[in-house]
Image 1 (tube, rainbow, N blue to C red):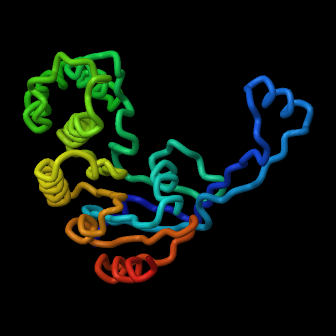
Image 2 (cartoon, rainbow, N blue to C red):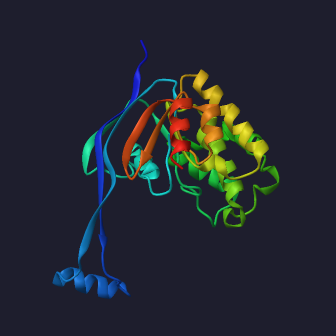
Amino acid sequence: MSQSMIEVENVSMEFNMSTEKVDSIKEYITRLVSGSLHFKSFYALQDVSLNIQKGEIFGIVGFNGSGKSTLLKVISGILKPTTGSVTLRGNLSTMIEIGSGFNMDLTGRENIFLNGSVLGHSRSFMRSIFDEIVEFSELEKFLEVPMKNYSTGMQARLGFSIATVVRPAILIIDEVLAVGDFRFQEKCEKRINEMMSDSTTVIIVSHSTQQILRLCNRVMWLDHGKAVMTGETAEVVEKYLESK
């Protein structure tokens, strides 16, 4: 019997947005204190539920603003849902925003150790897997270059290499595979498939439906914060493309 690794139960995420233009932080605070700043409630997610099994590669599709990234941030614990709950079983590695966990003033070499410490790995352990990270990222020539001089594709390469060199129980990826060259994307997809074989559970958000079709076992289609459909990849993607 397969084991449930991620359970999202009736999750809603509400944000309050100012309905007025405010020109400075001082004006914002003044209006906030005086009660003259008006807000409009906005739901990025509405009553979303899903259950992802061990070893699944689960995709999330939807137009811009549909709530995909918000859902990933809620699952990752970056955002606390307004209502509902999330249960994770196992250690988590995320690639939600390119450059997160990196210090742009430090070199690629220094950031490998920094990112490793953020993930809870010791310096000695990071030394033991350093060569493997560098080899996979193909950034040997740029290790002594500050990260601020890296392209988004180079940042994604290094981030993906670090996040996946040690197999986490759960891996969350948001659009990261969309940057960089096609050959490296293929290399990343191959590693993701290897991780699934090792029983890692993967969630992927991608605008590339072809990538979703290649990788995912099941898919959720989000629209305006609501789950329109969850099911077999080909069926959900077909309905999603018909709605465009």
